[in-house]
Image 1 (cartoon, rainbow, N blue to C red):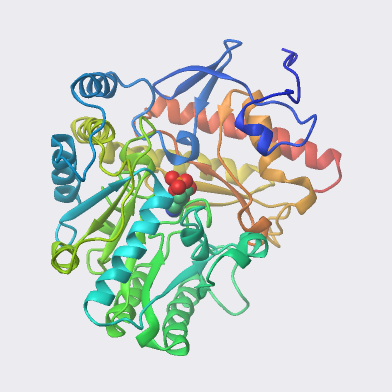
Image 2: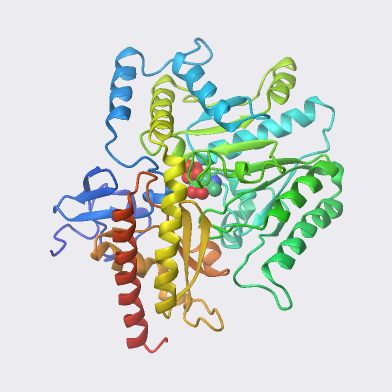
Length: 460
Ligand SMILES: Cc1ncc(COP(=O)(O)O)c(C=O)c1O
């Protein structure tokens, strides 16, 4: 169907006008969505193979959520936290912290992942100041890593390309390497490299001066920045021990990995002997039905800060009743439908199907992840693991080819492709076996078409 809409509207236009060059093909306009399918205004159907950017955990058009949203909007949509407590806030905090388990008894709700990162850093800093550790302010993070687009979050986001443009606006924060498992430095296997990466954290703390280091932040199962990287168990234990040894708080960014996606409520649950001090959540916690994020913290930390005058941080929409009611319905739906168990079972099936594709594909180099947080890495040579040439912008072309075939996949070129190129395969946690098979077939067809294109261009 030819795209008859003006390529560049004279006024206004969709948000894509901030991203797309003049004349670039327009994205389809979404009309409706149900379950794991979406339809555009032309009636074309797409299977949502990545939950948007790993958001729509319980799928689209969920009746329970729509009901909760309507009922709460009728009762009271908004009330300022400085004047009123609200019931959905208390209910959601109880629910989320009981799922998160010991050591994370308090929840502070915000409007998204970046806000959650900012709140976690500020809570950690205020806790340090209140306890007289005013010299602690540095937050060490991994490169690559992603913790948000606001300036505080961007300073700890390990993306040299973002630093190049926005670095002047931020206070630079130390970075340590992420323990990649696929493309490794010479004389390393994944295990030995992960040990080296953990040692690099301790080196960085010593180099910076332990008394200046406030926290270390990492994604326990990687999101887009590393393509669902899973480090060996010993890495998690080593990081925990290093942080404890130096009085550094350990923050797990679970914006993508949390809320059931890896088959447990928190990815942290996979490493019970390496518990974090603070956890951030967003995306799946309200599954796209409302903007929402959260910081989970120990009651002891919150008490110390509250006794000293209270958390010096807040947003107009923090813990607003409407969003919290939506969050409650999403989390209850996840529990009642046993979606964490489904994420585990369907993740196993999806991985097996993708492994079969990999065996036949010339460009599918690696499959990583846990549960339904999975990514596929694209290469042009499986022997050398060479990524596609940058000028091809491979992942964006693959997304286009996918949309043509009725599958919606998510990617972004992390660090301008410095560490490789991958796409997220992260369907809603309600996905069935038949839908997993449909996703795998469509990914096979999409990668097949791209492989053909690379052969025609003599890239492979
Ligand atoms: C791991 C991680 N942290 C933080 C963020 C920022 O979340 P938001 O885009 O909701 O601000 C993201 C977003 O993709 C993320 O993946």
